[in-house]
Structure formats: structure tokens, C-alpha cells
Image (cartoon, rainbow, N blue to C red):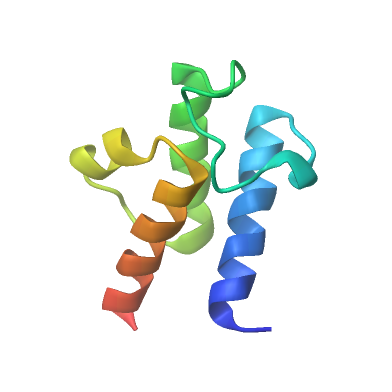
Length: 84
């Protein structure tokens, strides 16, 4: 299993936990606009969990842009690549 595969799996787990969804329902297309569970409070909890899990601190601009699973994976991937 690659690091990217592990990161993707862990992001899906975190999103599922925060939004109270089965991991099987956490697809790249899942977004704040497509899920009533993705509230502003859950968004902040999600950002906090991701920062704690991956040891990053997102900028305010990044926090606003993290509005879908795809955006989370892309942003986190860039952040982790820049650290490596």
C-alpha cells in the first residue's frame, strides 16, 4: 500500500467519522453542497481532525477550499509532498 493510498483511506475514514457516514459513502464527489451532514461546524471539526492526523496547518484560503473530498485529497497531497 502506497503512502498516497493510505492517506486517501485515512481521509475517507475521518470524513466518515465527522459526518457520521459509512466509509463506503465517502466518494471524491462528496461535498459540502451534496451532503446535509457537511455543516459549517462539521467542516471545522473535519479541518481540525485532518490537521491533527496529518500534522499540517491549513491556511484560511485552504480551509475555505476544502469543500469536497476531492479538494481535501488534492490539498493534503500537495501539502504532504512539499514536506517530503
